[in-house]
Length: 303
Image (cartoon, rainbow, N blue to C red; front, side):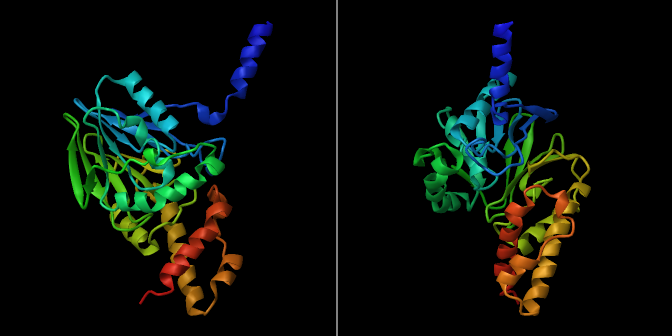
């Protein structure tokens, strides 16, 4: 009885982030859904949706996670599910919760790392900052060796054949960041959209508000059976699932343009501008003012 009680206590003491669950969301497509949280010493920045696609001859990893340890967890999950070798690690953009698991895959023979044509530059510029704050922010001491830049870059589109399974990689103009990459699995019509789509988690602007809205206009005219966001649950009701994000970004554009026209300073915007439907968004208070600042800086000088 005492032994059983100790087991229960031990299991209850395991943090939520330690559980690494993989779910098949379409035939041969597996996703680990991250927590909707800020990165901290408890979740170790393991907060993004990451996973892999299995073909007849190759596996493609789509984002490797926020730490080398999470990358290793992902690698072990792949080994449990398939004997097909990992040929590609695709990073959808530069944010640390998507790239710092790369080093777990670097010793695989003939592995290729793929990203947007601007990803390597972004890694070089931001990497030192990510590393410097890692120990304090997420409780993990990252190093330069954990930054694995792409060996193949995408300027427009690139097709990968995983063996009876074609992926179309698209390098987007500046939107969420200036190095956003999406992955379309033609076999299941599944779009791995990553942080171009936030579901539940407030969208985070780190690129261009106008560019993001332009990409949304293009994407919502297309049909996809499954869409995998960077944060939040997988969706199957495209393009309806993108509308909350679109409305929020449209609101930012409209209200900021109005305030700029009225001569309202950024300081007043940050104090007074909220969002009518803010309760639908998690982490609203953590990112809304940052989004206002980014939008103001961009729209202040538009023609």
